[in-house]
Length: 132
View 1: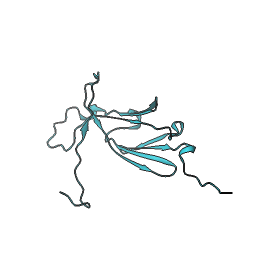
View 2 (view 1 turned 45 degrees about the vertical axis):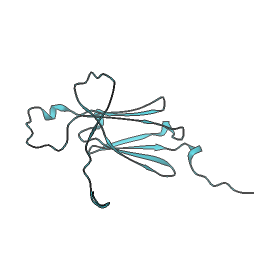
View 3 (view 1 turned 90 degrees about the vertical axis):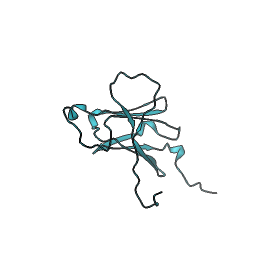
View 4 (view 1 turned 60 degrees about the horizontal axis):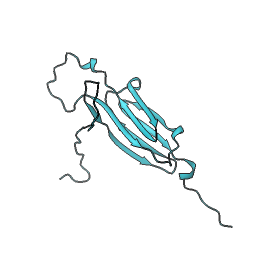
């Protein structure tokens, strides 16, 4: 077992779904970190090969859905000698609580790393109550 200071390899997890897909590609769950401050939640997802143009982020019925597609044409004709990761699309869904201000959610992506900022609703932010 690795000590707390050592990095450990994390394998990609394939999306487990009971739905039928019309897309002939594998879909993976992006590795995700979530951080919380008094003002917002920050969600960071790793999606190598995904660009801004091939990314869909939606909120519907309190479900945040992220889907990133890979341009497979970049890999046509290549014969891998050695690979450490599989190529595929990405998908992840999160149930949002009423403490998130859904209209204020923002998203950026750079170098395959997507950052979502989910601002907290005013009622969820800590505040000081003055005693009179």
